[in-house]
Length: 504
Image (spheres, rainbow, N blue to C red):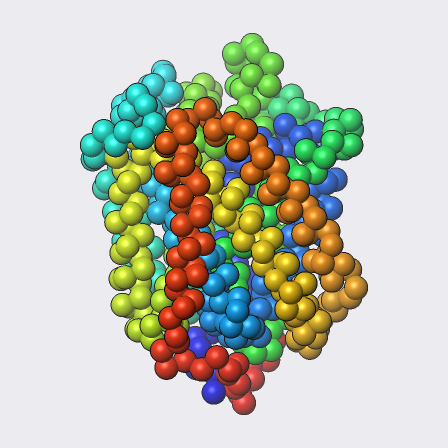
């Protein structure tokens, strides 16, 4: 009998999956990546990557969770006991990401408040690194606790863990039904306002004008696959966990297409909004748009405050909308990230949900204090780079090879998905997962490792990169193996069945 908790509605699941996919990277990573890799021409490799890697992988992970009815470690153990460690590795990756994702949301929360009186003043860069983060001069130094970020960090964890304790239907589902539509409405207001600014057309031209020469560059295609891969929350246990809460009769492939296209639609919307305001900023400063394009923390907390300062009217209101959007996008993703190890702890150790949230979430909250130190940004930068490029991407590659080539489970998963879905999976699905995706991810991994062996990331000291980069990325693999050695407590590795099947 399958007593696993379930989503209340199909809409609830789709909003939760889309909420996980739509995160900070959609807003601050995609626009810069697209611009740097051919503008409008980038949309061709991006769409190709979506159809040949993003959606096939999403369907595969949805199917694994739905078929094997467990957290990522339990689902992989039920697929084959020899691959359970992969589930724990992915859970470990999520744990590490959760620790620093929370601090970025805390910064966005602070900046929402700062927007009311434009606290960052005329020099947002000095305000961010000096006044707010009190950044140490050198990487690797802790520099003591930065108390100005502790209160918002505590609020983030209280909100996230409070939602998770409420469970799947009454916690995660309700939160996403509120947060995600609110995020879309806020961002639509931002985009509409941005489109009316002087210079917006120049910004959009810079974003959409295709540089067709880039289409022949392998670097651009790898960038497209990388963006799709990291954006869709593939490879770190989230989608396997979320789909395990679906009713037995759920349209898996349709859900995957809706989730993927919603995510890509939001990325495109973010690109339009971001480049409209970058065009405005370039015109105000009398410089080329290439001089104001940034991604990541610099875009969100330096460039956008500069833009907000120069807004002709209602600049405080625009600032509140933008940073509140970051908070909501971050929360929907962080909830899904933490749920992966909460579910893993529940399944493996057979404890209550409250205890699993307290232990897993509590540990993540404690570890997140590392980034609340004055040297926190350096730790965040190197850990984020390595856990994504040598963690998530490598785990995804191992997952595809293990399921497709070693244990040859694609045919079984295809039959399961086709048995409950309207859109049938054909030969294209297997072709993508057996050949295209492993080749692209394999090349990405080879290049990442080669480049990082040739020179240290961002020129950081070797001791710092080894301690907080290589060791962290390798440590989660070791932890995955160690967790898989422990037997399962009161849980059968046979797949549960339920005579009461819920209709689509």
